[in-house]
Amino acid sequence: ALDATVSPLEPESRPLERARGCVLAEAVRADGDLPAADISAMDGYALRRDDLNGDEPLPVAQEVPAGAAAEPLPAGAAARIFTGAALPAGADTVVPQELAERLDDGRVRLEALERGAHVRRRGELFAAGSVLADVGEAVTAQLTALLAAGGGARVRVFRPPTVALLVTGREVVDPARRPGPGQIRNTNGPMFAALVRGAGCPVACEESVGDEAPALRRALEGCLARADVVITSGGVSVGDYDLVPQVVAELEGEVIFHGVAIKPGKPVLAARCGERWLLGLPGNPLASLVGWRLFGLPMVRRLGGATDPFGAPFRLPLVGDARRARRRTEVRMGRWVRGADGLGVEVLEWKGSHDLTAAARAETLVRIEAGDTVSEGTPVACYPLEECW
Image (spheres, rainbow, N blue to C red):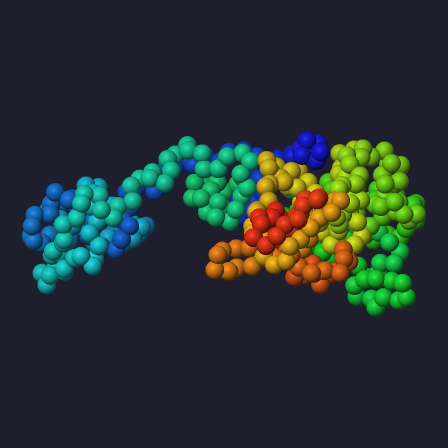
């Protein structure tokens, strides 16, 4: 439902150094050849291959360091050259210095190699006008190097969504405070701030509010005014104090879905409020983490231009005891296991969807479909948690 409903935000121009993690909204073409000339791949001597005549030494006509403009190479001569330097006009081969003998009279005796040896040809990586990266490609750190080489100092990317975080519940207090009777520290707020920033999205605000409908409405309206996406924590189930669905209805939000057949995380709510998006997640930390990874992360990825925001899970063999899902699909915390047979995954023991110790050690989510029993060695679906992959 989300993939069919959510579409990318408007494009913007960014300096290349600020584009990592963004998705290209426009193809990037090279403004020149790379290499821009025939380049030496070694420290050694450049020459015409036809000038090598047995053991006859050649005079050294010039020295060409990287970045220098070389003079044309006279017939019957060699040029001392260094890695990355452009070959002099007329030269077609480089003999590495390890295969050269410099004589007392300044001449050099060179081992015969094939024509074109140790030469990086002009345009062998890309030619002027060629597409270096196309629409829909994510800008990785290594792609920035290629785009920089082709002159892409600025690129057009889909704007990453800004995200507002709203934690609900009168029992939730700031992590710096010692909780009183009936209170708990705010753990979801810091976790979501880290997850959102890790996904490349700016955090517009981090708010908390109690369980009163008027206060929740004011807080939600404020968040919607400041961000493309609002992620709420708590208040989305069917209890007397679960007021997020009620307030969304009051704001005339369009509910995309409310409730999914997974455990934990059943009461996830996704809605559109005008041009903004809301994702309501459960209050239990592991349930909210599952909701973020399966629904929140794909939502912000799609808004940011990703063409396949959900992506297929990895399938790795289960390590350890057999696992069973009953009436609902179960999503558990997992950890990679590296053994002699390769990479596998084990399901971490937990005490329930409140178990922060299990979440803290998790490297992936492990999905077991409803009604399935998986034994050791059976491939299971894994959804890596980005910070750990």
